[in-house]
Length: 67
Image 1 (cartoon, rainbow, N blue to C red):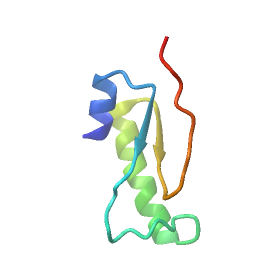
Image 2 (image 1 turned 60 degrees about the horizontal axis):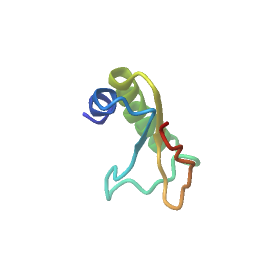
Image 3 (image 1 turned 180 degrees about the vertical axis):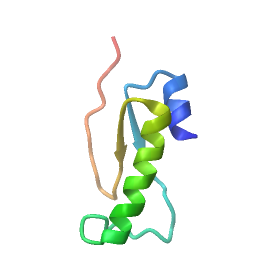
C-alpha cells in the first residue's frame, strides 16, 4: 500500500517506518531480519518504482524542497 500511495502522490523518495513492535531493527547483524526487510522493501519498490528506504531508529536523511 505504501508503494502505491507513493506512486500516486508522485513522491520522489519513499521512507518506510513503523514495521512492527516485534522487529528489533537489527537487519545489519541478523540474517532473518535482513531477509524480512529486503522482502518488505522489494514489495514497496514493485508498486512504487522509485527509491525506497527502510528507516531505522535515529536515522536521518535530507529532505529536498520541491521547486
